[in-house]
Length: 85
Image (cartoon, rainbow, N blue to C red; front, side, top):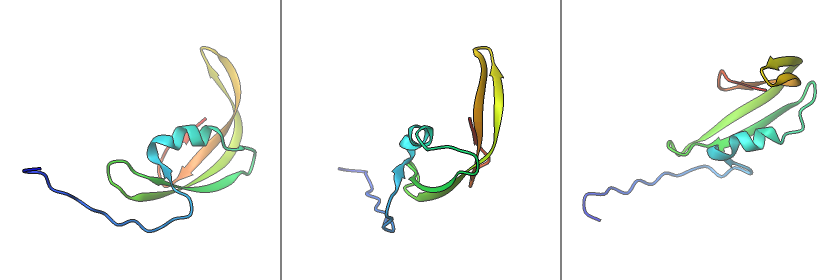
C-alpha cells in the first residue's frame, strides 16, 4: 500500500518462547514451591524481541487484603523489578 513501510526483523530460534500476552497466565500455572527457580523467554509484542526472565520463589508469606488472609509464595523476577503473588 502507498505510504506504508514494511519492517522485517530476524529472531534467533529458541526452543520455547512465549508471547508476552501469555505471561501472567503462564506464571499462574507454574509449580511454585520454596526454592523453585525457572527461566522463561517472552517475545515482546511491540518490540519484536525475545526477553529472558528468571523467576525465583524468594519466600513464603501471608498477605492480608480486604477479601481475607492468604498464604502465598513471593516470586522475584530477575530482569524486571516486579513482584507477583
